[in-house]
Amino acid sequence: MCGRYVSPDEASIEREFNLVHAEWQFPANFNTAPTQVVPAIRARNGTRESALLRWGLMPFFAEGQPGKYSTFNARLETLASSAAFRGPWKHGRRCIIPALGFYEWHVNVDGSKQPFYIHLEDQALFGFAGLWEGESCTIITMPANALMAGVHNSKARMPAILARDMRELWLLGTPEAAGAALVPYADDRMIAYPVASRVNSARNNDEKLLEPLQTDVD
Image (cartoon, rainbow, N blue to C red):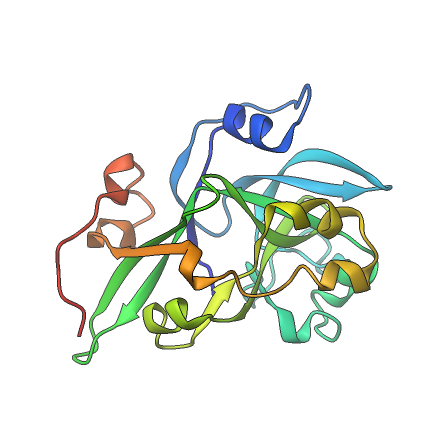
């Protein structure tokens, strides 16, 4: 799953994704949480556009109201069958949610949870594969690679991270072609290390959250 991540500022996103005259302005968010408004690049009518979307997809049948089930993540295995996500998937409502990194929690043998920060070695700023509906979005998750299975040992899931050369295919390709972009990111191009438990509270939002914590993992 993916429940917290680091969102870049608008200037960094515009440079990385070659966006011109994006009508948004926001700082970096070092502890982005579900229900917050997040920047995204989405496909609509065959073109790319920037948008600020609520993280937590609200299906059309919800009539603009959050449901009782969490929808900030969409499982790859059920995109075509889930009531909440099959519509956006079928109609090509795909988006990219820019990120600098994300957090995941490792469960120790004593039951305590250690947060980790994960980022990429080959993309300083990358994109999660997502879906959108109205003014809301979700991040797609999939079975974890070897690195993430060791970190997220309770469920062995990871977010769908797009290779740079797969971004346009994901946004504008056919459903079959876009599906080919949804593969686990290579674990040898990912970096993970433990961080302080301050990240557990979304009220904490500063760059110090990314500082490595020297600790042993059980």
